[in-house]
Length: 307
Image (cartoon, rainbow, N blue to C red; front, side):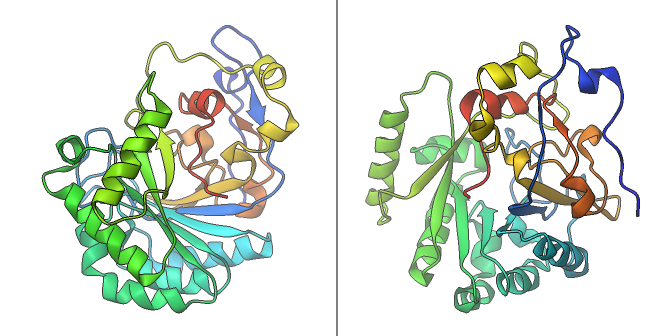
């Protein structure tokens, strides 16, 4: 099946000032992400996917949606499968999808660690015996329960702590996703996280993955600088460009009942980044850095990947 070519329009290839736009030219597929759907048990106002209960902007995936892409990714020598949402454990088929993927490669699941994970944990536990490791990343926005709950709902901090304990007690590797604030004292924030984790009986040295404000889907924030070709050669070299997620990963989503491949986990709100239905063709397509979230990768080194 033919895939959608890179958009030819000028604002894809050039910046608002007419300069050649910066880009990444992928060469390999090391990580395949699956978006399990924008349905979630929470309604966080800052969610970069706009997820909430019953949301269907991106459809919930089924096992039969994921398996062909897992198989194709294996043919391309993928190193890891990763899963995000929404809340992946809202997805009915997530256990069977993980069971199949873990037969072949390590997997990472991003979760809020609350009710959906806790209710299904008896089904999750046997995955600890899979041929490859399953890791989790749980969202704790701030090292402050009240502030975390302000965005995610009362009691969600304690539920996430409960989920993290269950994950660790079963032997799964665990990291923590947190919110990054402008001008923050990173060392101070990480020290506060260590203290609050230890106060709840968790290791204080869990890996922290910090994310800036990505804004809601379809947002067009003002003042985000353009990334030009000159930027990508003046301030980046070949090695640093290879660390951009779009250089080595893709994300599979289900839209209007069909599986599509997007350039990375952060751009599924822009159809210009739809790279078709097959990974083999998608891997060859140049990624223009026009989405405002691309600047977060450029300036902060932001990445959803743990590879």
